[in-house]
Length: 390
Image (cartoon, rainbow, N blue to C red):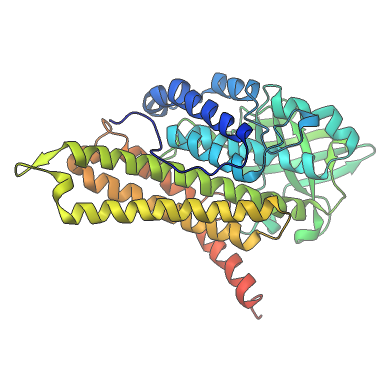
């Protein structure tokens, strides 16, 4: 097994501060994350104390304003931090991405009073967030969600079930999308719900093929009462808020996919350059050299694609299509690269003694979360050719 490290990546960071941040992240990943990643994933253990450390280090609020305890970093920098974390352990990289997603609604659409009351603790106060959009019967078709919020004076009462919730059952707060009006996307509103709210409970975590250390669970809202002061944005604005968040969240998944792919490439490269067959290093065989070349090309292309989208976002320009392209390409590439890494390691690649098989199992989920890759193709096609005719 190779030591942690995403290899000689040419990170063209915009400031000295960003370069210092990346040095800190790489050191933290090598010291605190990578050494225990395999054992903790096998045991299904979520590293909550590590997320407390990440919060104290300012890594859970990198893209948000410094006045609220955020890091004030552009997405171009934040995504490269995610890549580093995911290369060490996907549970950590994706967990930071989900937490950032859960903070987005309040940071972007909350009132000044709401941000002053809640956002500092969410960004740097040791809290962990969850994002509650999907439901058992409303995954890709999120606009058909049925969890309902009913107005009762100065409060709302939430009833329903959310599904596929990362950090479900352990999150300190949840951004919840619930129906307050009629059918369709215009009847949905966003709420900030405390993780310990009365009437909120979690089912047993899903038994997943990968990312076993990251709990994914259904959340049940059984008459959960919250004050109207925890409604984010206007009534009926929730679906637009959710889509805005998902554009950025998809870039997080793309960066995590590149991190996993880079880790798999490193593992395969270390193996074929030290293993000998037929009295020659495996790296001498042209077929294997070509596989490595293709893997490295896809990693570099994926990184360039997510950074292009990130820079559009940082400039305030539309990036929905580019975010969908990045999520689609990077996660598909991660699946191919991790599969090839297993193949290059041969029988060893199929064993848990080497991390290649874990990378392959983890890569699969990245083609599904934050909108399946079939949904990404629909998004891209709509930007190219317009909406489908009915």
